[in-house]
Length: 478
Image 1 (cartoon, rainbow, N blue to C red):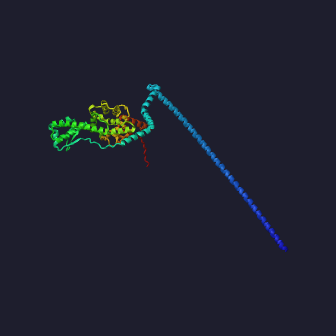
Image 2: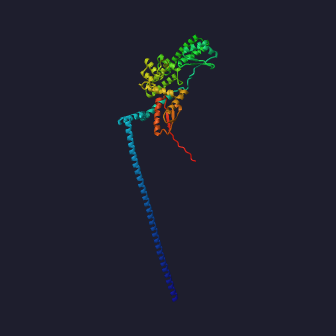
Image 3: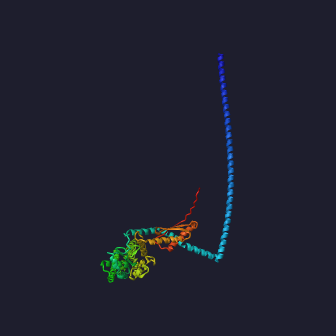
């Protein structure tokens, strides 16, 4: 029993000793690990502090370098500013010296030179300033312009007009080639009698089956055509027969002209006019203006004037009369000479026509001042009738001459290398030498070219000018 108790005690003592040793080992391990962690933490803190110190030193060195660079740039800027001031002062001295030398050589005082320079600048840019002023003043009137366009388009759309052209060649068919010999007559008596009686030229050539009648006066040409047609139908050609038939043809043309004039007045709903006026209106039927029948053009202008006047709240009757009679002088200018507008207005004034109509007829080419709104109506309607598509046809010669004039005028300016006219002379492209004309010079050249075209050339509508200044540099890498 005693041994069992001793063994139990020994076992308890051994267990307690083991526990104490385990506890002591655990405590030692814990203290050792804590010391290691603390040492490692201290090392990390020290390393971070050193890294921060190195980074701060680098930033400080970089800041010092940037500061030194800034001081250097500032010093250079100050030096350049001082050099610029010195150049400016030298330029001012040179300018003053040149100004004094110029005044001394010219013999003018400073005030006179300044006044002369101002006058030159004013003369040079007066037209440009006027144009800019008109553009600035026209901007608030855009609504008015839009309304005017609407009225004009409405008036033009309400008319139905022909776009075909009348023939300008007057030819008469003959039944046989023997008739040509009879028309010439013995020793040319018949053809001389015909030409003296009609004032026209009879051209008998080798063209089979026809002869041509040529005359600048359209009425005489029509008389000659009718007389020749009747002579050919009669068959017996003699000087007395020619004179008799020419007189009858002239009377027939007069009656035909009177009938055409009366029909035009009646179709427009106007009261009958003086017989002389109606006859002159009928004579316009035989006259062409750029292949447009002048009487048809007058009727069309009258209709346009009436529609425009109605849209604007004006009396359409005087507007219609003014439009119909605006080219009346063209039937008289071959006899009286002078401007057809003034000749027609003078005749209408003698016949007691309304003064508004007389002024509109006289002023439709701006030869006199407009005294009422009817004159601008006639101008607008006249331009609209003549410029509509198919109304008139210009000859090839006039087109070529217009293009040549535009190109020659542009090539006459210094620095212009090439010039081309497009769209029947409505657009001009000018190519300048970039070595002789800079950007400012190109603008000035464009202004002077526009002024020269407006002053020296005659044209309808507007001319768009495009000035091209291009400089290219080319090289080849091998």
